[in-house]
Image 1 (cartoon, chains in turn green, cyan):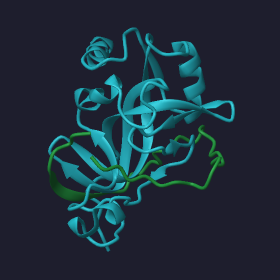
Image 2: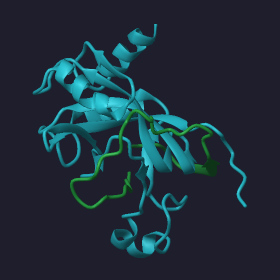
Image 3: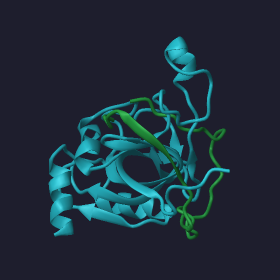
Image 4: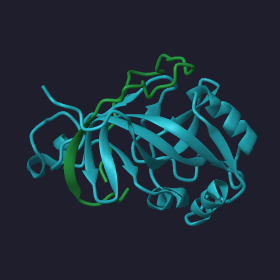
Length: 39
Length: 170
């Protein structure tokens, strides 16, 4: 995805949890992967 | 101690493939075979370093300004739409949905989007046509994420979905 050149780094600490409570955490089918996404 | 810049998540646009795992539907990243699990935030990890070697900073927490790592999102739906035309490891093999994603933690602000350390879907938009499953099946299956899921009466194509989103907002 083309998102342009980096401009600055920010720290975002939401007061409210962004993951809905009604969405129950599920066990991953495999080992939990983590994301990095190059352009 | 770092002082936060924002107390609310940043909301950006991205696309996902929809795949079936163990009888249920899951979102999958387009570029990498990464499953987004309901109720679990994505936590970014840099995968570029071992591939890019000296071109990028030494192994580091994602995202870093001078790398390509982090969970990507665009400022507008138009910027995320190119993935609707087919891209990535599941091209032509699974439906693609567009949606907004909440980003938080460390976030690299870019000219037309963001790269973040943490992410979770904010809402999802399911095009009605061109998928092997009905939109109702997709919307019902994606309800497990606990976020709004809207059906868009359109083809999953660049320019078409953003126009439908504009009509939805009007």
